[in-house]
Length: 335
Image (cartoon, rainbow, N blue to C red; front, side, top):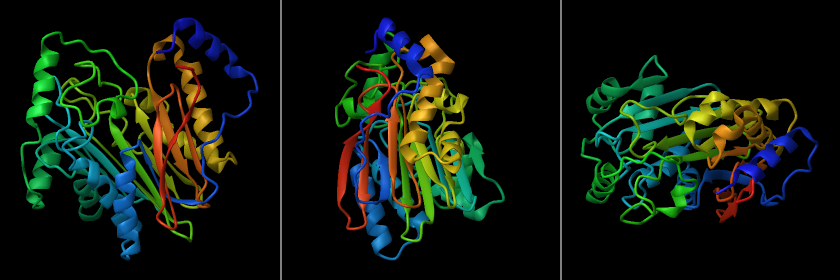
């Protein structure tokens, strides 16, 4: 974890014209990108949907559904860690590059929140449904209803209740994947999402983001993920961006919309991701000590950008041949 001295020295240096960080972006243009190493399986599903003739929305929905249904993934969908009252609640958003948007927040009893979000986009005049209304809409639309709290997630919650320690641990998406319990019980609090971005050869794009949110969050808490412009933003002819990490810090700066706006202004996807991370560090100072926030961006040419506050953020990239590779994002601060 970053110590205070190194973090403050890094913040003090932000105003200087520093060279851009080392790149992990592949030379081959990307058609699908997603957050975290478990995004590789999501990319494969999205690629299969595209090659089968599906739309961009079909692709990102198919990709997002993979971690939503994975019982080993405790930060997305089924088996997600519950809120502090023991309820698993899901947030998701889906968006195309022409302003089509659908989202749900605090959804319960439905595994595939991303599919409910798409149904909001296509079947209602609204862009976001929340809580009881979102859950009732999903049921009325015929989505299967089930208890999302698995025995493993319930045990982790009961262990957490013994101390009710509410401290964030960075990069817990990878640290706890497939484990029966937290590496630190109650610590997986600043992670949460898988975000996906996909593009066609003509440059058209779409994106999706889905999560079960902070483990043991306050009931009713909604992070950045389902909020357009925070957890996800896509704009025709410019590109798209998605975020991961502590959602409150992303929401404060409308992070994904800021990345896309920077791309519109002429920055590359990499430069745009770096700009918003540096902005968060300047704005928040010591308040972001030990906090992870990462951004991932894709433009219509297939250029990829990724940057984060702390080391550990990974992302998956798939090219037009279907080859998927996982990369480590450069970070502003050292470990």
